[in-house]
Every structure is written in C-alpha cells, then in structure tokens.
Image (cartoon, rainbow, N blue to C red; front, side, top):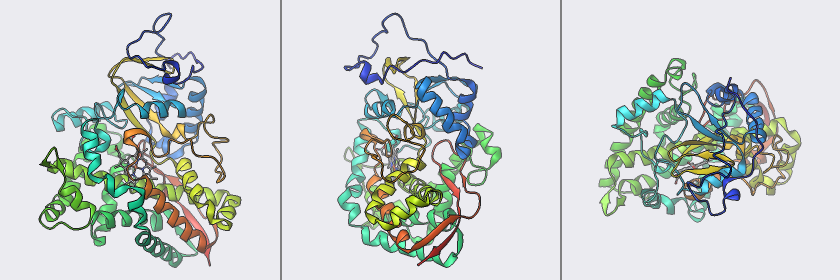
Length: 457
Ligand code: HEM
C-alpha cells in the first residue's frame, strides 16, 4: 500500500498561478508527488468498478476531498496524474496549449496495449487518428471539415426527421409492452439510426454498425466487447482492437470511394471529399473520421437516455414533474447526461513543467481528467448524488470544453430532448422490473441492461 499524506487542495493551477509560468519552481522546494492509495488506483483502472460504481464513486469523493490531484502508480500502467475536481478538470481541458491530446494515448490503456499499439502503427500510440487524437494546427483543420454540419442551426433543421425516428422507436417499445429491456430493445437503436441517416449509411446496415460501435467502446466488457480473456490480456486486447478497426475500414473505405465518385448530400460525402492543405484527405484519416462520428455519437447518447430513464424510475417524483411540465425536459436532458456521465475520462499530456493544484507536473506527464468525478463534485453541484431536474447545471463538464468540446453536443441534446418529449407524452407509468446493469468499461459506458415494466397512453 502506498503511503499517502492527505493534503487539502490549494485550488486549481490557474488560481495558483494566474499567469501560469511553466517550469516555475515551487516556493520552499518542489512539492511532493503524492501517490493515491493502491486500493483506489486499482479501482480507477478496473472496468468492473465502472459497472458497479458504488465503491468507485466513494473513492473519487475521498480523492476530491483529500488528494484532488494525485499520482497513480501501478504495475500495469504508465504512471499518471488523476484529476478529480470539477474546477481542475475544467481548467485543464480549456488549456489545450499546455495539455495535449495527441502525444500519448487519449484514454487510459495498459502499458502492454500501448506497446502493442505503437508496434503495430510504427510508433504512434493511436490505432486511429481522429479529432480527439489531434492537436493544433491539425485539429482545427480537421474539425472545420464537419463543423458546419453540427451547428445548432443545422441540427435543428433535422428535428422532423429525428422525431420520426424517435416515434418509431417508442412505437416499437409500446409493442414490446408491458415489459422490455429498455437498453437493448429501444435505446441502443435510436441514436444509431439518427447517425446513420446523417452519415448516409443505409438503415439495412444497422446490425453491423451496432456491433462495431458497441465493441469499440465496451471492449473490456465480457458480454459486449471481445470477451473476458481479451480484457485480462492487454496485448491481445490491442490486437483485437486492430482487428475491429480493420472491420470498420472494410465497411467505410468502399463507402468513401462511392461518395468520391458520386457525392450525395450527406456527411459521408463531406468527409470523403474533404481537402486538407489543398490535398484530398487520406484514407486512414477519413476512415478515422467516420469511426469517431459513428461511435462517439452512439453509445454516449443512448447511455444518457437509458441512464435518465433509470433515474426517473428510481425517482417517481421527478418522473411526475417531467411528465407534468414538458418545459423541464431540457433540464432532464442535462441532468441525465451529468448523472450517467457516459464519457468517464479523457487523458491529456502536459507540454511543460507546471504546477497543478499543488502538485508538480512534469512535461510529458500523462493526466487523467475524470469526468465521472467532476460531474459528482459537491463544490460544483448541490447534492450531486441526487438526481434532480431543478438544478443549475450551467457548471458542467458534460460535453467537455475548449477546442475539443463535443462536436455533436447540439445533436445529442436535440436527440435526447425529442426522445424524452415523445416518450413522456405516452408513458403513463414506468418502474424497474429486474436488476439493471452497467457496462464494464473504463472509457465510455453506461447501462447495458434496464428491465422495465410500463404502461403507455
Ligand atoms: C450525451 C452524448 C455525448 C456526450 C456526453 C459526449 C461527450 C464528449 C466529450 C466529453 C468530448 C470531449 C473529448 C475530449 O476532450 O478529449 C467529446 C468529443 C467529441 N464528440 Fe461527443 N459526446 C456526446 C455525443 C456526441 C455525438 C452525438 C457526436 C456526433 C455525432 C459526438 C461527437 C464527438 C466528436 C467528433 C468529438 C471530438 C471533438 C474534438 O476533439 O474536436 N459526440 N464528446
């Protein structure tokens, strides 16, 4: 067990050093590198802890109070800093100049997976290269390709199409009644259908897309991912990931070629025909782009919808409020995303020696920004462990911040608002009818099964 001397935070690094001078020494000598207790280090890196959540959330609460920026030392991972407070997470994500996304893995991966990824890519830690893996100047060039497709105005123009998809999903749910597994029968299909429509992928390919996107993010989960044996073997896990990316490639390269020859009014055509510095986007980066749009927009949104409904079942008072006053639905959307926090963390790499909440972070250090913790921070949210519609969520790390802020946030909010409007208009009652379970995933996760009993109008 690592020895820990709990230390009260002295505030975020920006508060301590308004001008943030990288490399400036610490008065009175370099601050100690405080290591978080081994038991908590194990929880942070355990997919199963994300499925159970209770002890993980308790551990994160302890860290926010006692060691808001702490060092995680473990045999299986390169050392990294764990940032748990909302204010610190916010400060770090806004400073993309000081904290890069592309230098090291963008999510927590075991050393053996990282080594395998580098061996297979010829040195890069990233099996694919998407917006989340890029820094400036590339990042803004690639983001500009699709930015106009994801503006609030543009996505609002999709409202009618999305509502049609939402109504069809809810009608299917009604046919399942009086019980269903809300995740498997309803929620996982809806955002995927929306994305496939925007991308221009035929709806007949839904089954294939669903399998690919679920495997990508829940790869550590024995039921959803590559299986328990790969989860326990990081090198094999990396190999499986490359196999999966090969499957994405086999699907998207022909699509890209078709759109190059015959462009349509869809996102697949925009990406296929994009130019970077005057040259056509190359295959690898175009496929990476398709992967992030298909995958990032799917599990996150469906998990937030399921997480929201789960919470409404457990909080009948909030269910009644949302049903009686549809004006509260935008708040239900925000609270569902906060409550579920489908993106559990992202990683950054320090580009300079600096001080972060009293800790000396060295250039090249790997840093975990823990959204699960930030979204339950009692300094940012009143009674964070309660699901409440009438809360002020203006302070949130829900969709990230700064240059990497979620490209699809307007789409996600619109999809969720429409879905809840349609669902609550029809749902007379709903309750849990079995044991709900979350996926075992360190990076992106949420409910994987939510058995419910319901009545519809
Ligand atoms: C509730 C749903 C969603 C949540 C909670 C969410 C959350 C996030 C977060 C936290 C980031 C920042 C990652 C970082 O800082 O490294 C992000 C980035 C991103 N998201 Fe989302 N997301 C959601 C839905 C979507 C949707 C619907 C799409 C698109 C179709 C999408 C596409 C992206 C893309 C492309 C990025 C990378 C942006 C960049 O690096 O410039 N997301 N998302």
